[in-house]
Image 1 (cartoon, rainbow, N blue to C red):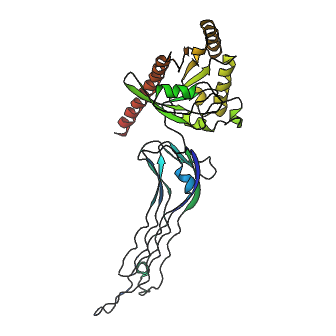
Image 2: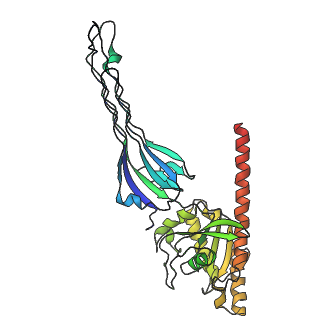
Image 3: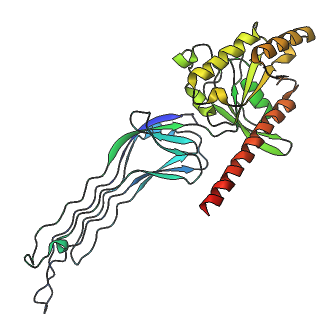
Length: 345
C-alpha cells in the first residue's frame, strides 16, 4: 500500500426534502383540511477515526463525497425520510483543514472520534403548517434548504511515542529495522527513505511506537531536498532520538544543522526532550570514537550515547533512555486526566 499523508476532497451534504401540498379526502369526512407532510432532512458528512488505517491513499482515487438528499413530504401527514449520512473513514492522527489549508476544523486523535463537517439541509414544511383561521386550505409548502458544500484538506500526522531525526544516511532506518519488526528500505545513498515508517519497540516488557522520517539537510525548511513536510509526523511524539553518523567529518556542525532545521520548522519540535546518539560507531576505532564523542558532547551540551545498529552496541541503553521519557510523559498525561475527571464530577 502506498503512503499518502495529504489529500484534498470535496464534500457536500444532502438537500432537505420539499414539503407536500395535500388535502385529506375521505368519504363521510366533510372538511378534511390540509395534510401535507414535511420534507426529510438531508444527510450529513462526517469524518471518523478508525483502526487499521495508516494512510490517506483512498482519497487519491475518490475526491468527491455527497450525502443523500432528504425525501419529499407526502400526504396523510407523512414526513419524508432523512437522507443517508456519509462517513469518511480516517486513520488516527488525521487533521481536517479548511480549503486554505491553515484553518483547523478538527483533529482526530482517538479511535471512534467523530466530527461533522457539513450539516444536511432542513426539510421544508408541508401545507399543514400554513393552515389558519383565515386560510383553511393553504396551497403552499416550503422547499427544502440546500446542503453545505466545501473543499477540505486532510493531513495525516502519525501517532508515535518517539521519533527519529537526523541527516540522510545517519542510520535511522537501520536502527528502526534492528529494534522493531518494521522493514524500511535501506541503502547507502541519501534519501532512501521517502515516506515515514513506524515500528513497535519492546524493551523490559514495555512497548512504545517509534517513527522514522526522511532525513533533513540544511535548508529543508525552505524545501531543499525532500523538505520538512514529513516533520509533522513527529510533532505528536513525546521524545526525539537524534542520530549523528560517526562517518561525518564535523559531528558538531551536523548536530547544529539538524537542530536549526527543527527550530525553523517550529511547532514545538525544538522544545521536545531529545536523546542524542553517535550512530554507526562500529566503523571507528577507539581513538576516533573518543574524539568524535567529545566533539558531539561539546556541541550539544548533553549526554551522548554510542550506538551501532549493525552490532547492537548501545541499542538497549538508547531504548531505555527513550522509554524513560515516554513513561514519564504517560504518567503526566494520566495524572492530568485524573484531575480533569475530578473537576468534571
